[in-house]
Image (cartoon, rainbow, N blue to C red; front, top):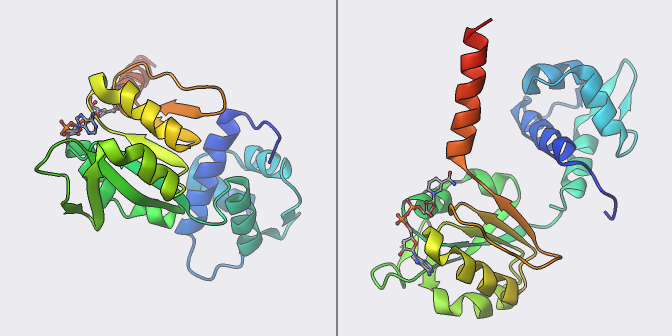
Length: 209
Ligand code: NAD
């Protein structure tokens, strides 16, 4: 899809996908009101967001769940599985490797890398850990599209560079480092500390009501 969709909308679309998974198995239709209850966004907002991508609903009848699911999968580019590599199989990396939810969302971690000789050659959550020296070659060979970086900050840039040389199109970086990527590669930084800060601020402001 060539068009630009604002980040906030993408964020809400992801919430709608998650909400659909919470519906009872086999649910045929869902109203924007139910989606609102499941996501916390208003029904009007949901209708507006979804109308950007086509006609999935009928007034009074709601959305067809299978059609909406298929449309969201298409919008997210998840028709096939998205192949992911994870670099840095430490505390965080190992926890992410073991997380089953990625598979349900359409992501498959097909390769993991580390430098520690005690980890290289082992298998974590069913994924073989390879030496990071093989990162570029393996990422290219397995047509990996996304890389998750969970190495110490000092190693983040070199790991990102190798992943980019291997052909990844997006990087999710957990390391507290400024990572640079060339145009054409997308970078998202995850910072749970900053999230906590925001949450704390909101809790604080609410307390002053
Ligand atoms: P860890 O020390 O347990 O794991 C780091 C792993 O990276 C180790 O297995 C190490 O051998 C490996 N490694 C080191 N250099 C490497 C290289 N060049 N190539 C490949 N692997 C390499 O650390 P952790 O607790 O798992 O944290 C990992 C990273 O995530 C750190 O940068 C940490 O600051 C960050 N972190 C971020 C958040 C967040 O919210 N963004 C939260 C927790 C941790």
